[in-house]
Length: 120
Image 1: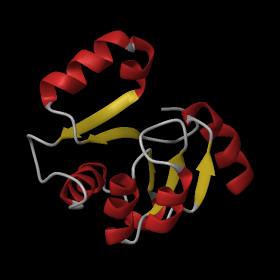
Image 2: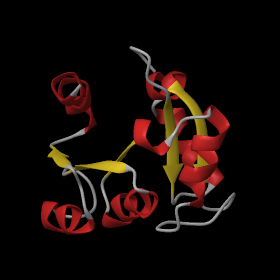
Image 3: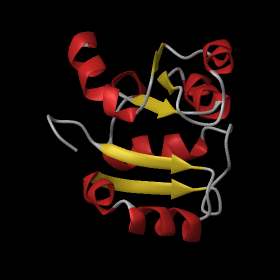
Image 4: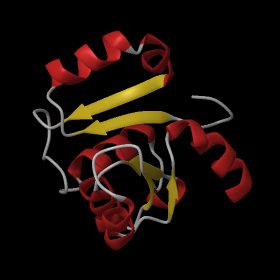
């Protein structure tokens, strides 16, 4: 994480699947402070994994942002009153992300720092 941000992963993948993905993305792995997977807690769209991550870092929901590529990611965040941004390079099309309550749409996660800079 940079610029005072804490990065966590809340995924529907299994622990084995996430660990395999992070092996291929070592630069990302170094930025991640915590993770929750579907086999460790309630799966999406239930918000328990986000609640657990917020509690771990003592971050109020008003200071958190979910970034996801599925309507389930967005719905999970919105169930807590958390803002969510959709990335359109993933699983669900933009219309589904917006219908689920995405605050904004980005082409990919690489666009997030610029969006955050403009949004803050």
